[in-house]
Image 1 (cartoon, rainbow, N blue to C red):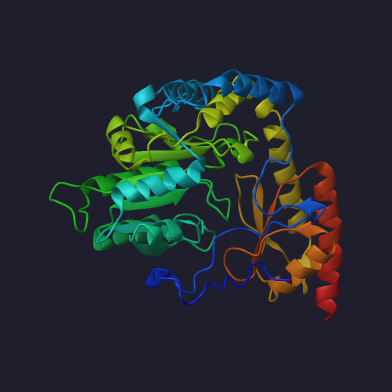
Image 2: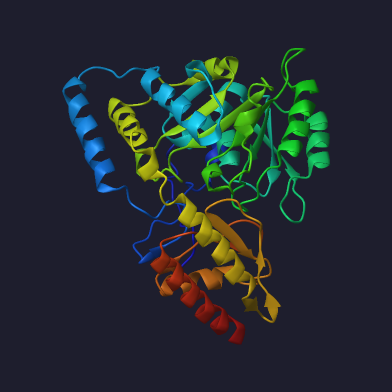
Length: 391
């Protein structure tokens, strides 16, 4: 069984020419005992959190005949309060913006700063949705390449900025699918290069926006800095975050953007009116009332990641130790020299374990699950590698 399936579009439908043959994005959603493929927090919200969410939604239910606060001011203040607590960075309400998951945040950024004649630049390998945001907004997509250890090749990135003249530079930290953190000194060099760079198709004096996607940042080791700390210094910096991962809120679809007011106002131009429902806003505010409970498993998942990375390094495939990419996320990219990762994927799936074949050839990615799920993953992987090696 493969990770993709055919998407037959009837020939008589006037699908955009550039979309013909394309497949919808998405990791497999399969009913298996151990799902470790979409980087979720495996721990459900505590009963007290569920009760508060239900109560807050019940309270606003009689008002659902009215549109919600389209500026979601209360929620933006909650983002401010959370970020000051989590990262020690104090921001104002007009420096925050929310949307339906960080996917919508990223799409809004591409809508605001991309478009026909505009270029977005990133560094490969990285999140496979980025080129789809570019495609959907008619933005040209370009890549610089990372170093062999998946760290940012800063010199190559700056050279690409100077030559390509992008409107947007998109960097993830930790990077997906590799888990690689972005060093602040490297980010500063990119930000400084962007401040001096031109933008293809824009007026003189216009410079690129640098977008740092921090979807997994709460899983970083203690003491590791965040790009949020640079917002006051760089007006061309935008930082995307989400409640989906560490905050155990993937099903609620709440993402948010931190940046200077000018960037936020650009995004407000392209947002759909009333894009965040009253139910979504109420649920998110309720979750923030229980921040400690929502983040209570993060340290354990971080320990699980470190222990799993150490264990993977002890495993071998065809006589060679498995490679494990440095990660500050809740997932691990491993393998490095799998010559038939699709076979490994299928064999694991047959044993009820679902991971991802993603990233460069030879690599696979596993998300951290519960202790029981990780035990089953380890057991299944040992068995599968032994079987595949014998073929």
